[in-house]
Image 1 (cartoon, rainbow, N blue to C red):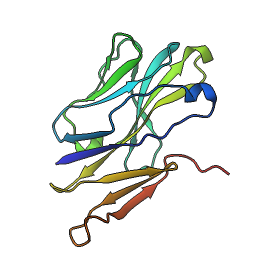
Image 2 (cartoon, rainbow, N blue to C red):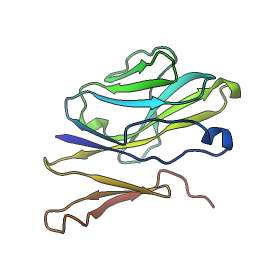
Image 3 (cartoon, one colour):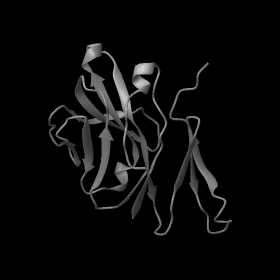
Amino acid sequence: MLLCGILSLSPFCSHDKCCQIRVDQPRELTVHQGEVAGINCNHSITTYDRMFWYKQKVSRDTGPEPIISGYKSAEDIGPFRMTFIKDKLANNLIIMDVQISHAGTYYCAVSDTVRKGTKTHVVKPLVSQHSCKFEQVNLYSLSTAGTQSVYLPSPNLDPDRPQPLNQFSPFPKSS
């Protein structure tokens, strides 16, 4: 089976300092079941005390759940590992032996010590990994204005016009 990952580059900023955060990451991620997956998180916050990774299940029936965190190192938790880059402004989430159950939305966050640990900046936009149950089937994810739609091409329909499978918004609606 194939896990198809799509990266949505939507900023999670509410003030100017947050919007100056630099994030570098791959545009797309494709992983076969049983392989090792790596998601990188690079940031520009020099005064941080901890990096966190969260996962939100595809079903979205619960909020993001913490999966692993650390500063210079982290203990492995199940299939999840964190590797830290020498300058400490980057790390990788490693998922060993990827399974369908790993599908979800992954978030990277940094706790800023300047804010005394009371504010967490999300510096890794979401990565959606959707389970492809049939070989040769690809999922497409398009992001516009905070809404993400997932499309699945159907063999009975025009393959150039993907049909909506599911639609959700990763951001709360403003009143």
